[in-house]
Image 1: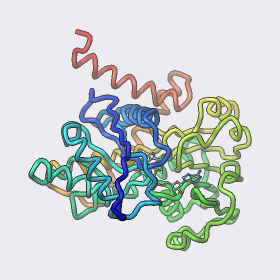
Image 2: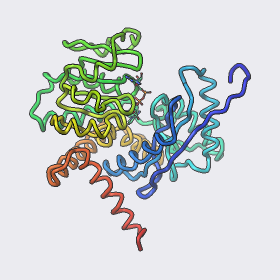
Image 3: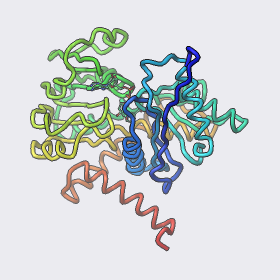
Image 4: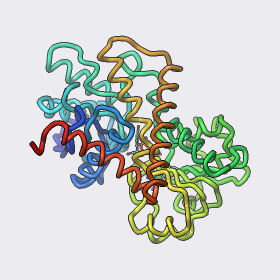
Length: 360
Ligand code: NAD
C-alpha cells in the first residue's frame, strides 16, 4: 500500500466454458465479490456469447477490494499482481478479460502491459476494453449502452409503441447506465429517472442527460424507489438482484431491459410474467459489450482498425439479429423471452460439443 504496509487481496478467475472458443469475461473489483458470483457471471458469459453467435466461451473474475478506498497506484499494483498470477491462464487464444463493475480502460491497459511484459512482446488481444491508443476499438466504451438502446428500439416496434412518448428509468450510472442514458436521450427517449449507489433523480418531464453528465454531485433522491417509479422502460444497470419478489408487483414499466447481469430474481421473473411485462433478458440486452469486445479482439489480431461507423453498423446487425432470433424462438416454443434466449444459447453450445466429438 502507499503507506508501506502490506495487504493481501483475494482474486478469482473462473472459466465456465471453452467449447466455442477462448474464454471471455469481465473483471470485477468489489468488496462483496464472491467465488459464487464469479461462477454465475462466467456461465452467463458462455450463454451470452453463444446467443450473439461470437466464437468465445465464458469466464469471469475479479478481486475482493474496495476501489473507492484505494489510490490509483494501489489499484495499479493490485491489477498487475492479479495479472501476473494469471499469466498461464490468460492469453488471446485462452482467456480474454474485459471491463466490469469498478474496472475501466486504465485497468485493462495495465493488464495488457503486465501480460506483454511477461511474454516479452506486445499482446494487445489479451484483453478488451482498452484505450484506443493501445489497441482499443472505437465504440467499445458505449457498446453495452448502445446495445440496450437497439433492443429497446426493437421492442418498441414489436409493441407498437412510440419512442417520443417513451419514458425511461435507469438504475446505475456507470459505464452501462450513463452511456445508455446519453444515447437514448439523444435518440428521443425521455429519460425520467437515473440513480447511483448513493441516490437518484426523478423528473416526470425528463432529465437533460448531457447537462447531468459532469455534475454527478446533483443526484440526491432515493434510489430504491426508482425501480417502481412511473415509466415505460426500466433499465437496471447496476448490480444483481434488484428486481425481487418484494418490488416486482409494484413495477410500472411495460418493458424491462436488463443492462446489469442477473438484476431479476427467479421469483420476480414469475411475477413479471403474470403482469405481462416485456422482458429483454440480460444475456441478450447487455450483449453489446462483449460483441464489440469481440470486434476489438478481431481488430487487434488483424492489426487493422475499423471506423466507428463500421463498429456501430456491425453491432446494430448483431443485436437486431439476436433480438429477432430470441423473439422467434419464444413464439415457436411458446416460452418467455428469457427461456427462449437460454434455449438458443444452450442449444448452440450443445451442438458445438457434439460436433467436437465430446460424446464420441
Ligand atoms: P460501473 O462500475 O461502471 O457502474 C456501476 C453503477 O451502478 C455505478 O453508477 C454505481 O453507483 C451504481 N450502483 C451500484 N449499486 C447501486 C444501487 N443499489 N442502486 C443504484 N445504483 C447502484 O459498472 P458497469 O460496467 O456499468 O456494470 C453495470 C452492470 O452491467 C453490471 O451488472 C455488469 O456486470 C453489467 N455489464 C457490464 C458490461 C460492460 O461492458 N461494462 C457489459 C455487460 C454487462
